[in-house]
Length: 196
Image (tube, rainbow, N blue to C red; front, side, top):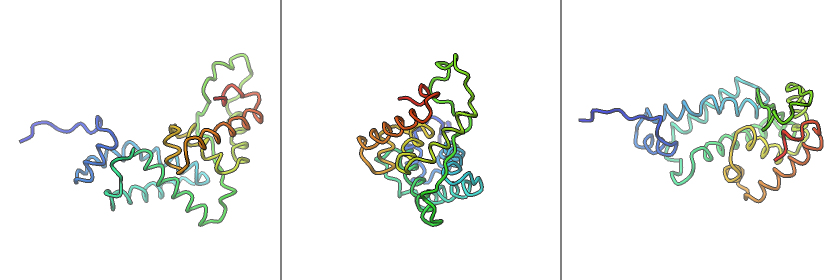
């Protein structure tokens, strides 16, 4: 008889999925706790600030995991796999409503860039920066905007972005370089914030 309880918080995402595949429902609850709100925010930004749609898509994604947990490739990183599914769901939605080129993204609340302190001597208006960045992001090609958002808003590594978008790391680096350069020239006053 076991006298101790599992501390699910200490398990990696991949370990939790292995436990869930074996039937451990509490492992899934921990995954949901880790990624539920995160995915709602991701879908909300990607799907035109439609909170209800974002919540529906999050439930649909977790529903897929519940229905078919064995579709997770245990040799892969869970976070990359999860974002690949989420990104594909968004792409399918863009196609469904036939407005993929007009997709609008929003800058996450509180996004300030890397080093606001470096601009202490500049009259810096965070709201103005967010609005300007949003406007410039919406002018970018989808492939550039998506790479920028996955890197700077979702915090994915270059390798994770490459896996999610099914492109090589060199392409990710090139796109990030191009979008950073473009944004730096468009938002000169904020150059230090968006520079690599």
